Amino acid sequence: MDLVMRSERMPHAGETMFGRSFSQAEGGKGANQAVASARLGANVAMVGKVGNDSFGAQLGAALRQDGVDVTHVGISPEHATGVAVIMVDDEGENRIVLAPGANLSLCAADVDAAADLIGHAAYVVLQLEVPMDAVVRAAHLAGRSGARVVLNPAPAAALPAELWQSIDYLVPNETEAEALTGIRVHDAVSASQASRALRSRGVRHVLITLGAKGVFLSDDAGERLLPARDVAAKDTTAAGDCFIGGMVAGLCEDMPLDAAAQLGIAAASLCVMRHGAQLSLPYRAELAALPNGLAAG
Image 1 (cartoon, rainbow, N blue to C red):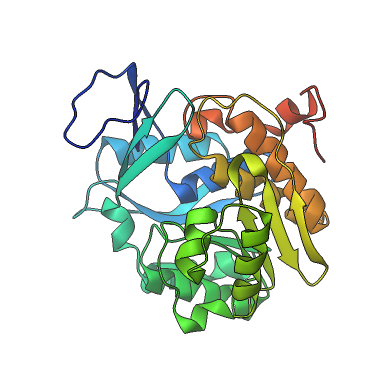
Image 2: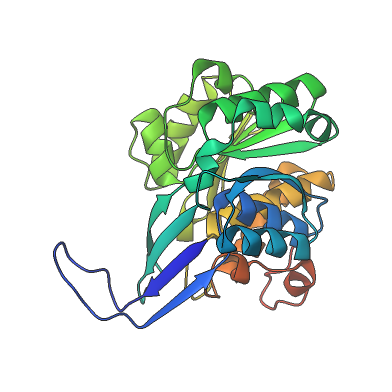
């Protein structure tokens, strides 16, 4: 669950200041990506854990409302539902602190229980808000069945050696790319250096999200920068999740990667023009109606 405080600017260390507003909304990287893909036309199921509390019930209901299969979203009686405290300034930039809660109780056995589901998937999308052993197991099952693995390495963490060869699409932001490579990523040149380092570890496609600069894509077809749309951002929360959800929805429709990434960029462009996490994620019909070349697909 996202607990969002909006303020003119970020407070300094030790400073107390008035905020503009407070709100509560469904969030979580995995859930955001699931909802984004579902709203853009993909058939989506989720594997995860929530607590036996009101937040968990609300999150499950929201996923079901968007058509996400929650058969394998379990309830942990010992843990509270995960919570993210998010601060958003007037420039639309955010700072996030995450208390994973029930997310940390997801284990390899839970993933094994969803083996049939994973075995029938075309794409398996993973993040690092759950324990690494569950991520590695999911990637293993995906590889065994022929599903393509999309990894969003967030929150940033070192990846075990056995995971690298399983990754078909690695989608970090600048901070996460730097954490994985030691290269400070801030433009296309540094993104190219980081992408080459990441691909040298066996990753087939690297897509580094660069915020307002766009998405840097590197694969066997070469390197290219896909520019972001020129929009007035109100809130960047969930923008990266929205991009991934849109890209995967496009890939599920057999779009070429560049076209699928453009769908993700278009979706993220609309996302940042709104406040909230899942509240800001667009439906496919909304993209088609957008002016100024924002439609994709």
